[in-house]
Length: 391
Length: 168
Image (tube, rainbow over all chains, first blue to last red; front, side, top):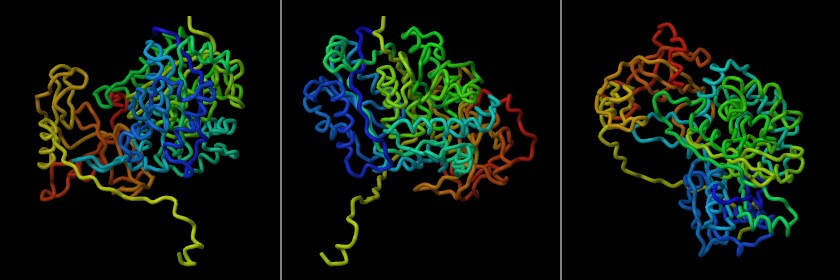
């Protein structure tokens, strides 16, 4: 990384099933406005805007960044759109941070969103392909067989996924922005919910949400000045990495993809992290289906291959007494405005190290991981943020 | 406005289905596999470097980045590597739920594709199950994977999961 940079402003909407009171433009502006207020800035202070969302087919608006330029104060400024499926919120934040780290811009606004109530994600992910059998059944239909293979390979007990589903919803009760608020959540409720994509119950799957996320990323001199003027500390970026791999190739490890392992290795090396479980205070990891917590615990090197479920099972990833809390915000299992979901992970990691996570704050958090993945587990984006400036 | 309308809730959102028709060009390699379906057989290609067999054929190896020219005809028999019982209704769905989609590994192939499993109760499907393709009647065969009606159990003993671990 050439120059130090930091997150100095954070904003998000209250994620909901339907935001019928605002358009997409109104919704992204709500998050952007909150991020600018946090940063002590206004639209005029921003040099460039970087925006991401899931594929355009979701809302049926092609290249919505053009229409959103006005709402985001980007008219006459550089505006970039990022496309990496479900990981896009993370990749978008990284592209924005690169513009600062490389010295091209000083203050970049980055925004990600999805308005699932204006769209039909199941349909958009299951469109019959030419000359193919019409078997696609949404993201759950794609990931459930891989989860089944993980359970078989690891020998995990069948209820580990349900434990993740309960834990993340308990976390969500501490986050006023989280979509799902299920005060009565317990294993029984998850077990009794309909089996949508066997082995995945309804409550082991993410919801469909409307929502937006935004951050202001600034160069060191700007971040230092704003810290002084706003009285709010910055989240310093200690490492960021992206990797991808083809969705289909012979010998592909779909359960533990190489691109994810390589991406984690790179981001931890940049941040000087050798043992993520010990050296990080918490992690916000893209877990749209319950079993992806143990799977990504292994993929990201928080434990050995085959042991992920043991961490989850022991409560290690719980905000309530765990040594490495995962998804203190409630995670994707509690809020899923798809395009924004990755940025929410990055943003929540930053909130933690700024000490601004409210009720779901991990005490004295100084280093955290933000993670996103997308498509058929072929896109990965990660960053490590800290309360201290990187060396 | 009539009195009757005044008592109704205002309309705040309209769903307006749209339609998009497009031409799809399959390309040389995929066309070979598609013509194979029209003849009731699976046609794939072998990579000259890693020797892995891809079906349907795709014209190049994604690992070695070389053209794949050697054609391989594969049998109807296959193994279920893993599967999912789909029980979620959605717009545009054409199969009655619940149904089973499985990752199908044809004998001699090195890549799986998604297939429908029938002829066995849902709770008896398992990883390693041996199956065979059931094609639509000859006069209905066409250049599409939909020419395979479904896969059904062959009755052979299951394949050990450890023997196809690299395909998961």
